[in-house]
Structure formats: structure tokens, C-alpha cells
Image 1 (cartoon, helix red, strand yellow):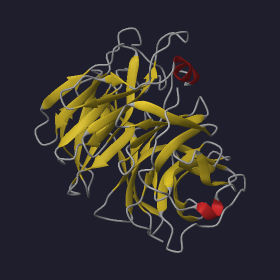
Image 2: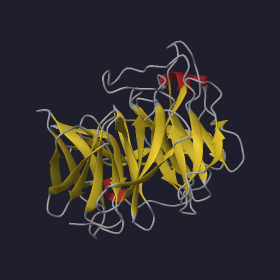
Image 3: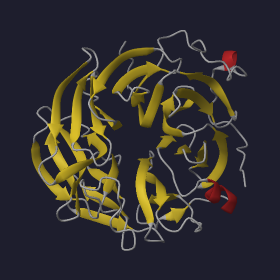
Length: 372
């Protein structure tokens, strides 16, 4: 069932390019300097990079990294600095200066550990928090690192196995963690070792003490919690990947807020079936109370009303994974080198282009200010 909004909460202004979504390259719809974004990508030669670009497809900076990247952590205290995480179960993170186009330092996870592709800087910019795997003990960790040296200061139990994405609540002190529940080991990198006994959860952690404040569990133990986003009211939108039989049907998008339970968002059984048990990135636009969840196996992005937890609509884009917020709507990227700006209310792409030879990775971030 598709729910239509009765009134636009915010109008977007890309009318000059509406109806031109099929063009390979479109001009900017703003007279000001265009907003810029950062993402990892691979090329057709098997090389891996981190790139800064705009939604018109102009690439301003790219830095080659040794391994395939996953997510990017942005230091808002140092505009040209980002941390790129190698894809799970990667042992490396890369401290990158986008202005100079260099890797300043490469950090290897401590012995017996690997990263899960995600991390966040503290709001004051002093620390980097990373999700890691203590794979000898199959225990998830949240590791606190000095923001400059990236040396480990302390670590906490994540509250589960296989912690993936983490995010801040609005108090700047509480972290919410997606414990995916899947045990892995670098000797068999992509093998899931405990599918029958996995126990994913959503954990709230006090970032200074490591105290676990609350935990919430999905209705089925094979609903792996992978990615999440937090809105201005501390409502968490959760995107899951189901690890059970392919014939099973489960909702894959949930919300959770405060002391309330984890609640499945409302959509038809057909939609859940079309997702093929897999979701990727989550992004929230607080101005219009909409969350976007990308579904690469399904070839669409889904839009959700944060006020009702109901599906608004879907937009077809093959192999889409990365999603972030632009001034014109949600910006999507995919493994075919495409970038598309989607307004869920207009149900069309206000811009769409493709970079030949690019294979964008699963996550994309908006830069707070344009750097180039």
C-alpha cells in the first residue's frame, strides 16, 4: 500500500531539470556553489578510491586506498579530513586529507580484531568511536580512539556480536549501536558462523563510561540489524538483513524510540518480498519527516513517513546502496556509477547522471560545507 502525503512539508527547487532524468549529465540547479559529497568507490580495474563530488557528477578530489572501502566518518572540526573504513571484515582504516589528496596515516586494528566498516567522531571532535570484532572471543567492541593519533584509549563491550553501524543521539553522549548478531572470523571472511544461534539487538551505550543503558531485540533472531539513522526526536530507523530461509517473509524496516519497543514499519507483504531479505543504507530528512532505505537487491529505494512509520513510496534505481541528504532531496548512488537526486513527494529524479567506470560503494556522506 502506498500512502500519499497531502501537503508538501518543504518544496524542492530543481524544476529546470525535471523530466531530464534520462540525460547522462545535467547542469547544476543552483547558482551557488554546489553541495559536495564523499563516498568510497572501485573502478573496473579493481582499484579503490575515496572521492569528493557533486550531484552533477563533477569529481573534485579522489584518493586511492589499498582495499575496498565501506563507510566514511567526517570530522566536522577539520573540514578536509575523513576516515575511510575498509569493508568488513577489514583490518584497516585510512586517515585522509582530501585537500592534499593523500592518506595521512593507515591504522591497523589491534591483534585479534577487525573493523566493521563504520565509525563516528565525537561531537567535540576529540575522539573516534569504531565498531570492532574481538573474533577470538566473538564479542563486539566499541573502541574509543584519539581523534588525532587514532591510538586506542579505551574500549567497551558493544552489547552483542557483530556491531555494525553506530550513531549519536541528540544529547551527544549516548551511542545507539546496531549489533548485527553475526559471528565472523577473518580466516573465513564472508562466512557467517552462527546463523542458527545469532541474537541481534539494538543497544544504547553511555559513551563515557560504556554503560549499557537499554537493549531492544527484533521479533526474530535472524533479523540482523545492520544500519540505522536517528531523527531529531531520537527516533531510530533500523534497516535489517534477514539470515533465515529464502522462503521466509519478514518486515525489514523498524523504528524504536525511548522506552518503546522495536516496531515494524507498515508496508505490504509484496514490498517485503521484493526486498529479497536485504537492505543497505538509511538516511533521514528531518525537515520533511521522511526516511530513505536503500534496497540494492530489489533495485529501489523506499521512503517512509516518520510520523506514521508507513511506506510512502519506492523509486526504481538498480543496485542502489548509498543514500544521503542533499538540498534537493535524497541523493542516491549505485554500483553502476549512477548518482540520482530523488524527491519522494515529486516521485521523480530531479537529476541523474552516470560516471563511467565507477562502482560506488554502500555508503555516501554529505559534507557540511563545500570544500572545492
